Image: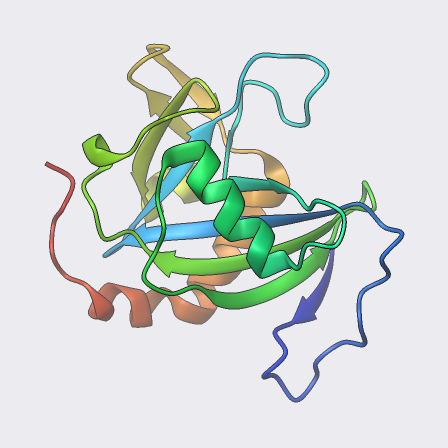
Length: 172
């Protein structure tokens, strides 16, 4: 997986090719826990039945930021107070993943799951293990490999920052 740093980085990449499929994804966090979506068990979608970030494909003429705002509103009815670009990743499937991060400032039970089977906040240990338990499905399910790797890279770079940013427990 190739990494293209955020635009503020001294190693910022050239503009992304428009002909490549692109998605915008959100790393949403509360303290040291991360919100993930359990994708539907549909064979025609990427990573069926696995945990992944919220987000989705960009529409024609849409910037990655616009796409992310739209996807979060559609999928969980949430608009974060701000989003920040983490990086853009070209995967083996030749999909450009534009990844942003933002705090989750509401309780999980205030979100509306409109896409996927389940959602949940998961600890760093669960992310490292690569499996998270779904309350709705009553099973451990894997984290989609590229999403897990991106989240591990994010933790390496920003783990301490986000732990200190919001120490409140809004999971209840």
